[in-house]
Amino acid sequence: MKKKYDIVIVGNGVAGLFAALHLPKDKEIAIITKGSMEECDSYLAQGGICVLKNEDDYASFFEDTMRAGHYKNDRAAVELMIRSSQDIIKELIDFGVEFERKQGEFTYTKEGAHTASRILHHEDLTGKEITSKLLARVEERDNISIFEHTTMVDILEKDNECFGVMVSRNDDVHGACDGLAIDGNSHVGDDNSIKAKPAGVEQDNAPAQGNSGDEDIALDSADSNIEIVKIYSDYVIWACGGVGGLYKHSTNFRHLTGDTVALSVKHNIELKDVNYVQLHPTTLFAKITGRRFLISESVRGEGAILLDKDGNRFVDELLPRDRLTEKIKEQMAREGTDHVRLSVTHLDADEVKKRFPNIYKTCLEQGYDITKEPIPVVPAQHYFMGGVKVDLDGRTSMQRLYAAGETACNGVHGANRLASNSLLESLVWAKRGAEDISKNYVSADHSWCEEYFEKESSEGYVPDKTYVETAEEYFYAAREKVRPGFNG
Ligand SMILES: Cc1cc2nc3c(=O)[nH]c(=O)nc-3n(C[C@H](O)[C@H](O)[C@H](O)COP(=O)(O)OP(=O)(O)OC[C@H]3O[C@@H](n4cnc5c(N)ncnc54)[C@H](O)[C@@H]3O)c2cc1C
Image (cartoon, rainbow, N blue to C red; front, top):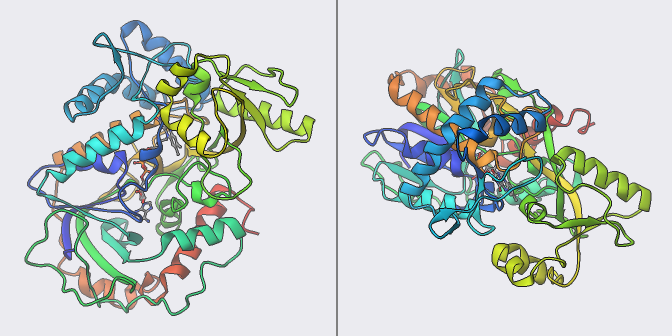
């Protein structure tokens, strides 16, 4: 890892990767991620991605998005997302993404709160298809390096301008985050011996892939040692995903703990709609804790029905997510149960297996043959509509800092996201942010940074703390913001 990149992207989901692909090829870009490459929610997306099928669908696509969002949406953002969708899909196809087709024509599916079928999908693994193809294109670029197990623990900021990030390498993010969300207590791990190196002692391992240059920082540490490293850059893009790790039950990866929320509080970066958190009505019920497996809305879109404990259908399965979640919770309270049941047994078994191979296989592994019996389902945290406030070009309130994807809030989803609008929104704003940077690129002067960030003026930066202390502090700061009162 070098000391300086032109642009640092934090996060390797669809937002981070798509942004990287839209930045100039003559800029050196570092993508960093807390986990390994496949540990991002983008890989988990099942249902699909919305697209404006034709002009006739514009008004109803717009209205469906607004209605689902309780009309709290930013209208300009909604229009921009819908109007950009066809170009985004064309680009994805050019990048090698394959969507389901019949006789050469796209097949569109439907999900809750959509009044028309306008969702493209790849089996029930749409996120994996898109993310893996974007990653393959990123890997072909010599100017982009990816660093796994590298956590942003701070930004290098002065006078509301961002000059890079401080990262922790080789840390145990999973251990740290799980401990917090599950206990809800201030416990992140037992290994108090894990101390960050003092500021200025910068070390490295080989990047996960990509280039390294002659200014590389020397290697002298074992993998097991956590290192704190400063990376300077002209621009930073936050593409850090959601906040599911703050919840005991969530469909998200556990290491997505809303770090940008905590850092925004610390550095006075504007946030927006942080109280808008979406629960998904149907996740596979399990008594064990850990990430909840999603039973995609498209299963209901294709005809699945929700049953009470006596086997009676009790609700319109295609209500918007928040309303359906309420109905399921009411039903569970009435019955005194901890789940309801979702059935596809009335649908053609071969079609179900073909359309939802991943869901079929995972449920089978958990002991449920969905073609023969209903599956127990329960609502769980799923998506963060709020986040770091950005404008239509992905700019945050801090100079040289952009945000895209679930971590950002441009207001497009309002108070409740319409199904399959998230991948689309992430891609639209990742591209716009990257293009805005490219168009207005101004190199930063970093000559003063080393001294400044090493000295007293940088007090409050993390090198004097352990990674787990920092993770814990940020966890509580983010949770207090997103779930006020919960920390108490
Ligand atoms: C189970 C599931 C199914 C879904 N299905 C759909 C669907 O069908 N259609 C749809 O449109 N949307 C769907 N979504 C939502 C959608 O997948 C996400 O909103 C979207 O993929 C977010 O992409 P992203 O790039 O913003 O973040 P992510 O893909 O989550 O990536 C965030 C990355 O940031 C990294 N990161 C976070 N904090 C730090 C830090 N401090 N330092 C370094 N790295 C950090 C993480 O390691 C991660 O790699 C689904 C979500 C889930 C969980």
